[in-house]
Length: 151
Image (cartoon, rainbow, N blue to C red):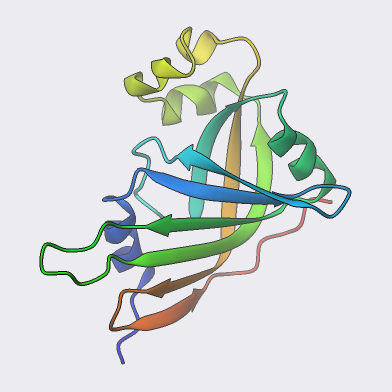
C-alpha cells in the first residue's frame, strides 16, 4: 500500500471545487455546509473559504475552531470510485483586504457581488493537522505539524 504525499493530495484537490465544512456549535451540534475552495488549491495544508461575517459557521468557529473538511471526486469513466479526502484542522477568521485580494477569483462574484469590497466579507482559513484519503484501492493518512489552537 502506497501513501500519498501532500503534493499528490494537492493534485487530487485541484479536480474538486466543492467540499463540506463541518463545525461544532456551542450547544454541541455539528453543522456541515458546502463550501467552494475557489480554485485556490495549491494545497500546502491551508484551505481558504470566503464567507459572510454573520452566519452560524462564524459563531461555531468562534466557539470551537476545530473543523472538518470532506471532499469527494467523481468516479472514473471505468467505474473506479473517485478519491475521498477528509481533513481535520483549526479554523481562523481573516478580515484583511490584502488576503482577500490574494485569494480572490472572479467567479466568486456570484456570491459576493461587490468583490473584495463586499460588506461583511471574511475569509475562513483552515490549517490542517491531518488528512485521510481513500481512492477505492489505497487509503492512508498524512499527519501535518499540529496547528496551534487559537482558543
